Each structure stands twice: as C-alpha cells, then as structure tokens.
Length: 332
Image (cartoon, rainbow, N blue to C red; front, side):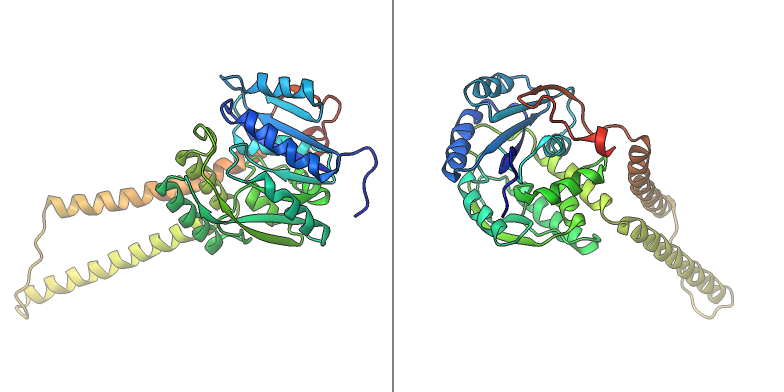
C-alpha cells in the first residue's frame, strides 16, 4: 500500500471514561506494539468528563510522547459519540478502534494490518470466548446479535464489538453519515467494503470495572442498533394488533353463537363472566397499546434527533490535536 506523506500510518481511537486503574498499562502495552510496527502512529483518547485522574494520565503520557493525544468532550455524550469524535479527528491511513481494558488484545494489531495489506478495508476481530463477562451480559449480547441480524437491513457479524481496523476510505464514509445515534457496528455494515473476520479469544478485564459497557449500557446500545437499522418493530406491532383484533372478532362470534344456542335450547352452555376476566382483557389491551406507542415513540424520537441536526459531540479540550478537526463542521 502507498504511504501518505506527513500522515500517521495508523490512528488508534480509544473511547475512555474513568479508566485510571487500567490506563497506564494500556498505554505501555499499546505503544510497545505500535513501536514494533516501525510505522508512524497516533493514539487518540476520546473521553467524556472524568472524575478520576484519567485526563491527567493522558496529559502526562502526551508530554512524554506527543503521539498520544486527548479529546475531552464538554459533557457526557456516551461511548458511541466519543468513538465518532475520535474518528473525526483521526488522520491515519488506517484507523483502529479499541477499548482500553485490554480485553481486546493490542497484540492482534499486526495480524489485522496483515489482512488490511491483503486488500480488506475492514478487519473485525470476532470473539470465540468472552472471559470475565457477566453471564447476563453474554446472554444479552447473544440475543441482541441474533435479533438484530434477523430483522436488520444489514448483517453484523456476531460476537463482535467496536474493536476493528478500518481503511481511511471507510472512516471518511462513516464520518459523512453523521447520524445522531452512532452504533458503529451497524454503521460500518451500512458503508460496506470488503471485510475480514478474525477470530480471537477475549480475556477478562485487566483491572477495575467497565464504566461504559455496563449491562444497562449494552441494552441501550443494542436497542439503538435494532431501531436504527430496521423498521421491523413497527410492522410487528401492527401484525400483533391485527391478530388480537381478529381474535376478538372470533370470540365475539363464538359468544353470540353460544347465547343463541342457549336461547333456543339447542345446547346448555354458558360462559362465566365477571370483573377478573374483564380486567385481564383491559390490562392486556392497554399493555399492548402502551408497548406499541413506546416503539413508535422510539422511532419518532430518532427522527426528532436527526431533524435537530445538533452536533454528536462537543470538544472542550484537544491535546495534541489542535487544528486537525475534520468533524461536524465539514460533514454536518
């Protein structure tokens, strides 16, 4: 591949939030791997406001190694926005997205670059195992990927995260999309390009607890992926509503038929009626209506967010990245 003069060969984008426990080891491990590549690099830490020493650790690392850079967002925008901010600022010929918990091993980077040199524009590591994760989170991930791939307009490889290597062209197309809800796994599938899936074994977190990827966060990101890439939920609620309506008509016909038969003495069969059965029906229908309204509201809410065209992130401080911004001002 032809090198781009004056630009890093690889940009590493790392979304972080309150990661002082694991950050020093991650920086040492990542810089060690990148130095062995013999290529120019940059590491962009993109962070929501942190309450610990996360920012100080990155600033200290930048003072020793200017290739280590920091994007400090003005408020908590969330992991997807932090990731997209890092992508918008990245300049590398290739761009790697990775978490700093060392569950996604930096040692895999040379293999990923090898496949990129073979002509693949996206290299996605796929987890064969998920050590150290809560069983409920594993279940959510399995069910979420299964459901998204059943209904979505694009296919997302199962057991994958945001950990991936992308060609510059792919990143530029991602930034151009400029969607308010940046579900990276789905957006990469939307832009397409030749993709290689690289199996690996995910280890337990090196230190501390995850601040971004808690179970509630996984549920929120997963639901966003479902709503953002398929209108299936809208059609399924319509189908359920039609089926319940048809069932109610059939039950009404049955009740009317039984009453007529009883009236003329054909059969002696009466339905037991009362408040409990009526309440059950009312609650069932009310629950269905509320669920349908909630799903409809989720889609309308995303239309509302897209219509406002607010920036996905606002950078309060950029350490080592001054003058390199190519984000919403250019693609908004």
